[in-house]
Image (cartoon, rainbow, N blue to C red; front, side, top):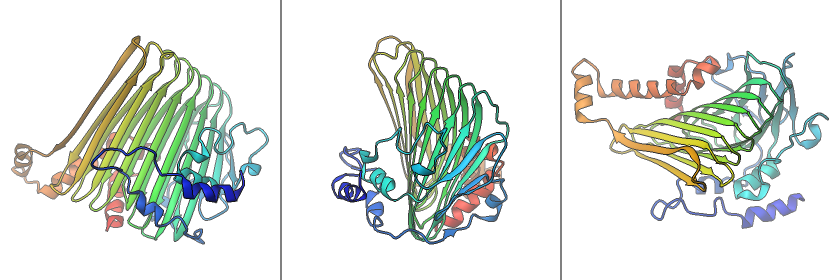
Length: 391
């Protein structure tokens, strides 16, 4: 489709077709994205903080060409468009996701300016994770990641999604294809500041017997929208997603996890631990759909959000859509709760201030998903970084 057609799509397409609720309407503040649609491409990128730059990074996406370091066990290449893909690549940009699905995906399809292709060959075992960094800048940055995990391969991937205080707009789309009996551990660390709204969308298709483990640590910024779509397309495929979510003072974080069970004996487990500090805003929406053909499948969603201030807002919204009576398990649990006076009194009686208690809760939540550990990063440093960026 021609570039001009995409321009027309931007005028016609909504960010989302259905309101999230009659009262809130939209959990994501799409107006912040709308205000920045015409931003020029960022000419330079904001550097990573020192402790993040010390992580061994294999590919860095910035304001143009992707910087890639070769590895003997993985096929890595930077891409700007489909023509840059190697001949053996079966996955191309937007093969798993519709370009015209929403205004934000149409924007990304038209303007993304840096990307990386990662191929884990069949039957290989990757002990050291492939680490990809996504930077931000003064202007628009669009980053696209394609990941193929070959039949029987065992792979590890870390995405560091950083957006600091520079004013801009960032979109990231990750498309992942897991072939039969393959395994992928995908660890994602999103640290966003007050400068840029960020749209981060991951789509994964799993063939028969494939297994996906997702570990997410997210510190929200000006407006962070994180969405994961898992399509369990082959029998016995499995997804386990564990999320650590923190909304710092004055930040907004909207997270969606969608699991579609499309084959028999598939499994999805989504577990969320979150915290809202001061006047922060945090939403987790977990959706699991089991179609009629996906008999004897199992799905669960557990979402728990701690409100650490009277000024904060948090929502935990699990939704199950079960189209067959033959399921192994289908359950959800959700809670949004504040620290009780009894809990606070007990901890303060042992010498802890309220700020100490909040820091302990936040630290435990950040450790919960295991994302920081998988990347070799101290979660306390991530929390301090997020706090410095939230102002």
